[in-house]
Image (cartoon, rainbow, N blue to C red; front, top):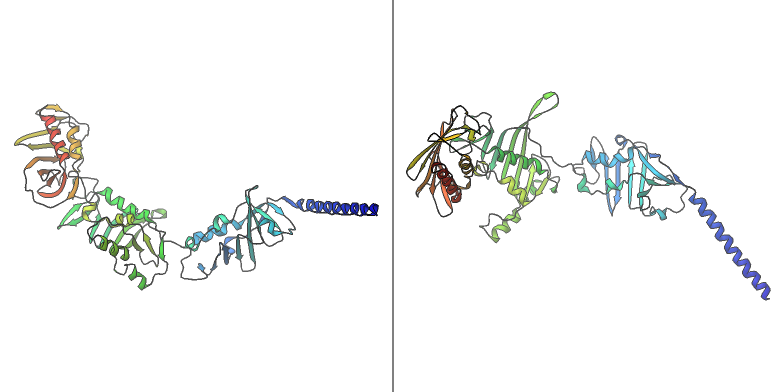
Length: 469
C-alpha cells in the first residue's frame, strides 16, 4: 500500500512539473512575440480629421469640424485652431518603438482601464487610441489602436492631451505696436496723446509724444509712454471668466460702463512693405465686489489690492487681471506720463548757464569751437572748470510730486539755461524753499513739482565747487 501511495505522489509531482514546464514554454513563446518595431503604426493627416475627443481624469472633451473647429458641448466656445493642430499633429506619423503581437492580457499594460482614451474620426474611418501604463524601463507608454497589438509609443500622446477645456480656448492677443499715431483715454482719464517727430513743442529731440494740457501742447516722457504700450503688449491675458459674455455679465463685471477705455491707433507693416492702419481697444474696470470691500475697509487707502476685469475690443471673452496689472494699466494720467525731471534737455545743447545764488550772479560757458560736444571744456571767468558735478546735480532734480502751488518761501537758487534750439533759446529754473524735505521747482514761470531738498543742496554745492575753487 505504501508503495502505491508513493507512486501516486511521484505521478502527481511529475504532472505538476510537466504543467509548469508547459506554462514556461507558452510564456517563452509569448515573449518571443515582443519585437522591435520602429514603424509608423498610424498615419492620419490633420486636415482629414473631422472630429476628435478624449477622456482623461474623469473628464470628456469632444470637438467637431465645420468651417472651423467647434466644441460639441457649446458651439459658442472659441476653439483655438493652433491647439487643435498641436493635439492632432502626433498622429500624422505615429511611430512605435516596440510591438507586442497577439496580446492576451491587456491589463498587464494598463490597457483594460486606460488612463486616457482618444477617439479620432475622418469621413471614412474612426480610430480609438488607448493609453496605458508608462514603462519606466523603456521610458515610453503602452498604447493600443484597436488592432489586437500593444505598442510602446515613440512619443507619448499624453504630453499634449493632458489638457483641460481652458487650454482649448482661442484667447485674444495683445499686439506689438509697430508705430503708434494716437493714444486716446476716456473714462477716469480723458485726453489724447499724439505721436510727432521733430515737433517744435520740446527742446529735446527724443520727445515724440505730446498731449494738450491747460490749452498748451506739452511733451511726455517717451520712455514712459513706450513702457506703458509695452505693458499692454505683454498683458496677453489668460484667466477668462466668460467666453460668451452677456449684457448681464458685462454689468456684473463693471464693463457696461468701463472705468477706463484705451484706444491705440497704430500702423503695421506687412509683406512687401504694405502698411495698414490698425486700432486696438481695451476696456478696464475694477472688480466691483473687491472695490466695495476695499472702500468699506479703508476709504483712504490708495494702495488697496483690487483686481480688475478687461475686455479687448468687441471680443466675447472677459478676463480677470491682477492688481499689479490693473495699477499699471490705469496709471495713465498726465502726471504719470510726463517728464519727472525738472530739466531734461541734452546737456550738449547748452550754450551758457547763468546762476543766481545768494544775490550773486555766475556765468558758465563752453569753450568756443567745440559746440555740441558732451566732452567740451567749460569756462568760468575764462578759467577752465570741471562741469561734471553740476551736470549730474542738474540731472538729479526729479519730481517727488507734481504741484501747481505758488512759491511762498525764499528762493534758494535760480538757473537760466541757454540752448542751441530755435524754439527754446533758454529755460529758467527757480528752486524755492518749501519744507524741511522739499523745494518747489518753478520752470519758465510755471510751478511744476516738489523735489528733494537734498538734491537742491547738491546743486548748490556743485555751483560753489566751481565758482569758489
